[in-house]
Length: 438
Image 1 (cartoon, rainbow, N blue to C red):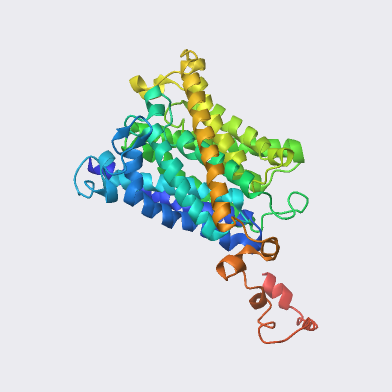
Image 2: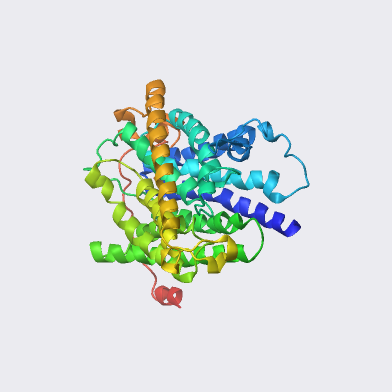
């Protein structure tokens, strides 16, 4: 019991790190004038959802079932009845802490779709309403005792439906309401800091081991299977993304590598304890290739998903959830598992997986559109065109990420103007070059 508690608390801390990691991943992908706003949207979600989860979110997701749709929010209002040091870690504050991190990161994922243009206050209003009306109930559908998706027998070990399809569909609904960025798609909007993107992807991968292996709720072999499959699928997904880039564009990019990592992590999340190595490889390579192709759909269909939340999280979540209907095998998890089509299980599991994916996608997208319209009516939703062009950081937070004046040695701050004269290079005494080289 103590070992399981320790592993679950460690996993909760790992998943917590994913939100700052996401902030760096997204922050590097936006333009320099928007990076602080992107970081703040992630951290804002962390603060807001963390409070709502403790007050009524956990109970709404995991309280006594009401018609298979939602938990009773009054069962554990303010964590009543849970604030005790003893008990099963799956029914105590240990579980509250672990699942809180899932609610936070799921909400923060949506922010990348509306980068550069959404007011910070509007984002917080949307995030609080969405997590209440969508994430908490959907978490109950999938993982709550009596939730209708779980009762159908759908497999979702760590969040393919509840997290990634949910967030990706919400992102699509919100961008349709807010509209395109000024200048998109004709104006190039390249990432301003690719090392940030790579750092963020690395932190996400690190934290994802807690996300997936922690969902075993025990320090046991199932956690080990989830951990190994997370490595396997993510590695091959990165290679799959880079291969598509190489064939399509002639180059393999660092942005592609980071994006492939995230696509693989997303796709293996629902499947990590239900597949063998071959299944993990299939899920990973399909996710890497398909997500690499899917991120270009926004240009053809005309929706401005700034940082490819739809292309990576919605598509990746669908890949992992649906492919479980083909590659799930009970040889991995024993009697509790189900077999997919490729392992002699018939089409039953596939049908359940498709149904659960479509239901979550439709519900989340619909509510997201309605919430987006409400937020737009109340707050305006997005900043003005002039503010967007000048940079949202200064307008929303009265800060900028980079002190360009200071980088010039403070000349602008001191009132000096113009370009400083270049000094002639000083001659190097004979023999000094050889000394320094040695």
